[in-house]
Length: 110
Length: 114
Image 1 (tube, rainbow over the protein chains, first blue to last red):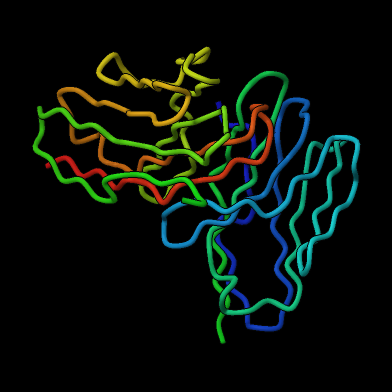
Image 2 (image 1 turned 180 degrees about the horizontal axis):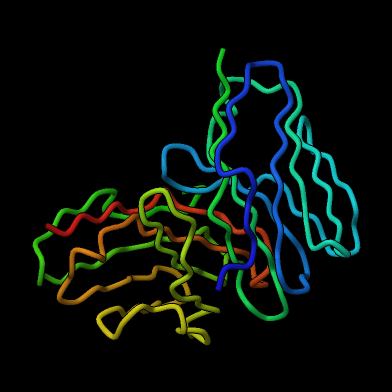
C-alpha cells in the first residue's frame, strides 16, 4: 500500500530559485528519508530524519518533519541545473521495509 | 567495488523465456532488497534478505518470481515465463543491517519483454 506520497508530481523552476517538495504519509514512522533519482536508474540517499526530529540540514537541503500532520518537506535552496532529477520520500515503519512514494520530478532550467 | 553493482544493465527477452538478474551488494552489508520500478512510477518492493534468509516475500508479484542469496552476498532474482507486464527497471539495494537504515542502490537492470 502507498505510504509516502509526494506533492507536486512535477516542478519546474529557474536556476537560483528554491524548490520545495512535500511528502505525506499515513501511519506512524520510525524515520523518513529522501532520495534522488537521475535518468530512471539507481537512487541516491539524500537525508534521513528520525521521528523525534523536526528539522535537519545537509548542504543546500533542508528537511522538516511534522509527525502531527504526518508530513515532511524537502527544500533545495539556490537550485542548479544539476539538481534536475526525481525526488522520492521513503518511510520506515515498525519492522517493515522502506515504502517509497511515486516521486516529484524537478526540472531546473539554466 | 565501492557500490552496489547489478548485471546485466539491460536485458531484452522474448515472452515466455526465463531471466536471471544479479545483484552484488556493498561488502559487509547484511541486508539486501529488490525493487521494481515501472516507467514513471515509484518503487515497488519485491523482497528483502537479512543474511541468506528472506523473512519477507510478500512483495513478489507472482510465483513466477523467486530470489535467492547465497553466502550472505550476491543475490539473484529469477523471473520464469516472462510476461510483457514484467518489463521494468529492477533495482537492488543494500544496507548495513537494520531494514530502516539508509539504503544504497545499484544502477538497476532494465528488463524489456517483447
